[in-house]
Image (cartoon, rainbow, N blue to C red; front, side):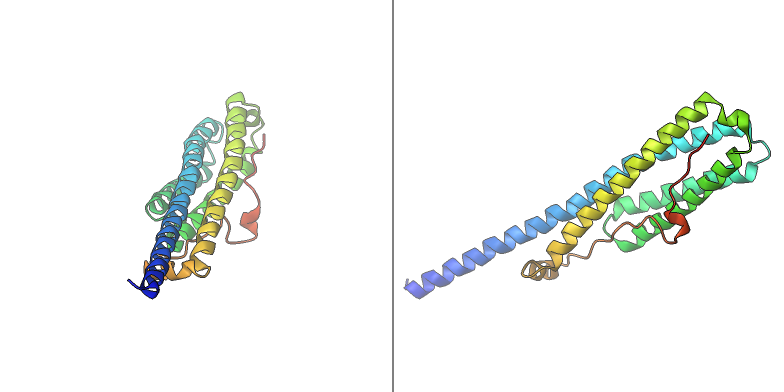
Amino acid sequence: MTTTNILILVVVALLLFWAVGAYNRLIRLRNEIGNAFAQIDVQLKRRHDLIPNLVEVARKYMEHERETLERVTAARAQVIAATDLVKSKPNQSGPIMSLGMAEGVLSSAMGRFNAVMESYPELKADQRLKDLSEELTHTENKVAFSRQLFNDASLDYNNAAQQFPTNVVASLFSFQEAAMLQATSSEAERNPVKVSF
């Protein structure tokens, strides 16, 4: 073998090792997006478990507010359905946008629920409601933190997939851009869910 052939083999081997490393990095980053959504899912599940309990405590006091209670329940069901869709495709924009819209509907319904609760002083004084509301507030904070982790993982993946020379590997193996989770679609939705007593 000539020196030129050896040099060519070394360059090809180095390129091959680099391509394998780039591919594995993209796979790792894509899997981190799935893991980050799993963390969101845990917090959303906790929130979705708390909401029916909160509604049930309020139901006995708010008999005349059936529509408000039904809106909260329906919005919760929409978020659960959207969450299930995202679980199977955590880096695609369509399901992520659907989840964001469903979360907006739920936030709006919870805002209405909280406004109606203000009209019932005996409900505001109920210790179970206070405990559930506090737990819901903590869960909302965890959801926000988990969303940030998801968006950070998506950003890292997108940066790696779009930067040269890794973008060549991403193009060859059809790595698609990961969607960012946006919790709001309007200015009104940017207000946090208000839990008050």
